[in-house]
Image (cartoon, rainbow, N blue to C red; front, side):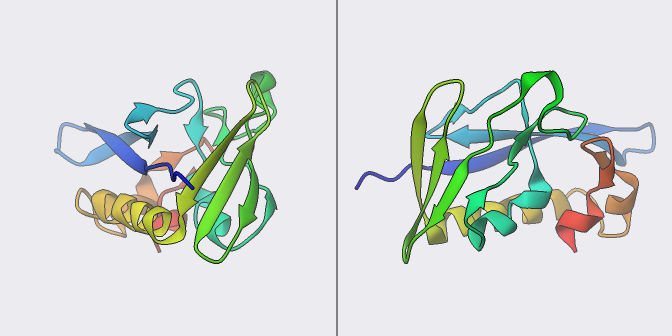
Length: 138
């Protein structure tokens, strides 16, 4: 079975005091931006490693999955060594990730974020309009 590669790329914006005040996270699948018009719901990433079924991973920037017709939520199937994301719209697609690889990609994202700010500073960075990064990083 061919497995997809996943990684997350972060773009940082800084204020005049050279502190991060905004971020943009891109989900890269096999080296290409995946669903670039949508935002990865980082608050569901850890959950996607342990819970099967619908998981709101791709959302509008407001954080609402249904806003603006966003219906990209994968159905997640967890197996012993791999995880499937079954995308149902706009085009059916199944992505297969090695469990260790996707868990490492999530940890790499957290480490990347924490290399640019402290855990306490993450409380000041809003993400998805209703949450701050602290909830994801703690």
